[in-house]
Amino acid sequence: MRLGFEDNIYYEKGILAESNAQLVKRIVRITKEMGRDVATPDEARKLLRLKI
Image 1 (cartoon, rainbow, N blue to C red):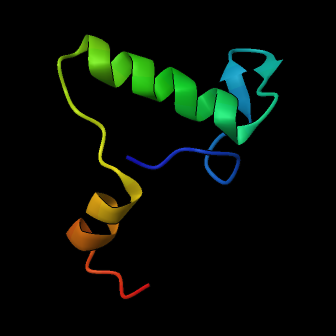
Image 2: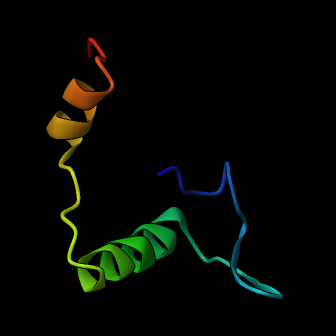
């Protein structure tokens, strides 16, 4: 899942997001409520096969 100002500048309809961190915190909360885990940066790099 992608998120951040590059993809969406609104936190909710008609309300601009204050920061990328605000958007990330919301999606982490929603993901955990759904019983899913959030990948760490290292796990995400491995999944995406990034060489960083």
